Image 1 (cartoon, rainbow, N blue to C red):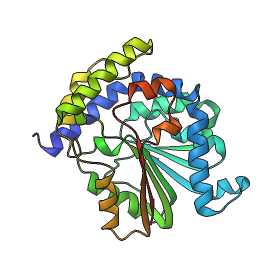
Image 2 (image 1 turned 90 degrees about the vertical axis):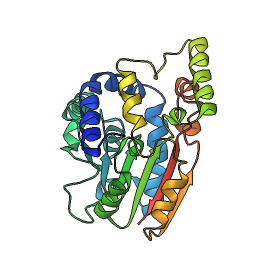
Image 3 (image 1 turned 180 degrees about the vertical axis):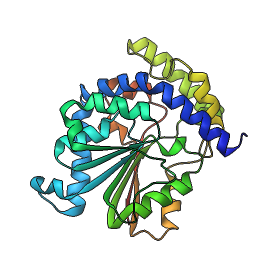
Image 4 (image 1 turned 45 degrees about the horizontal axis):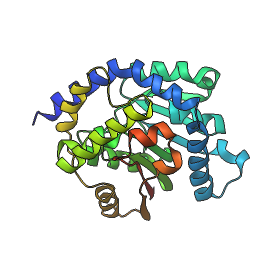
Length: 261
């Protein structure tokens, strides 16, 4: 295992240079059914929790942490929420601004460390993160920070998966390899083959949550922090994903952890 400091540096360097390719995926999502499936789910969760009408969305402040090239931030801003997009890679935020177009004027873009946020306690009504927690050297610290900046009775939605679990489990490796065969046979592009993929495997192999059973780990963490409620919905990807994503990630289903502070 490498030190957390070195792991942080390697991880930051990887995502700085990965921004362009990752942005292409975000643009594909924004032009596909995902722009609707994600909007419907998040809007339903947020408005349902706060009991607000559509015209009241502007009253809520939302933090999208690990915003990357802006997918969730753009969708939420288009719906009318007051969105702050935070990411530790300035190149990711630059891509997010381009992807947002005119919507960028409605989003507050901030360089932020997910494990050490710059915001005051209780700043946000909602905190949302997608495919971030698995990639953090200190996920407990990050979750504590997200809770800190969340208002009392605020809502947190964490979307993630057991990414790279195949590095720890031979059965999962076989299932992952089968996904690659099925993707090739389907004619879809493979999201898991690309430049410097071996670099991310090395990074993931050193991340503390790789191989940990989730969302059980997440539920236990938040339960021990005395939140009002924490629930998990497994295979949320079946609701959110395009057919291409379903084939790509068949052995690694996305889950949603819902927390009320």
